[in-house]
Length: 150
Image 1 (cartoon, helix red, strand yellow):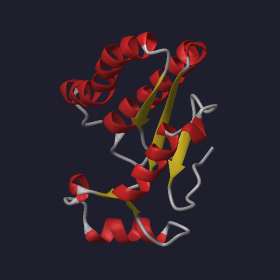
Image 2: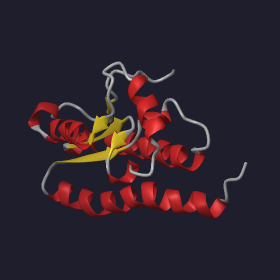
Image 3: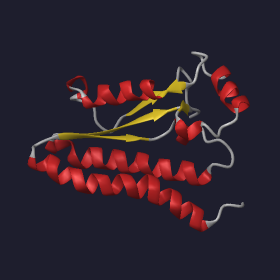
């Protein structure tokens, strides 16, 4: 295994610590306002991890755990905590990903395309809306029909 602990810590700091710090700032305000919504972005890869992505998968899996724990902890206080889990999504962060990999991911997706940032945003908008007022601790999969391995 070529993964260095320092690299692992950096990933955890961005993904888990970043979300944790945001929650520490906003949840007291939500409690004061008697409700609110937290929406974290995870990944479908936590359910079907690709090789050589341990630091990313572990950090996102920890975020899944944090999301579900906070959902249970604050549900009675009218705070919903959910997550959106997209498959590979065309963004500036995926510009470095090879066309061959993106095409393979697209061809493995039942809808035969990669997710867009708009697809992810629509799921976030749903969770932020009153339509999701009885939804907490849930993972909305934005995958074009790709199902996780269980």
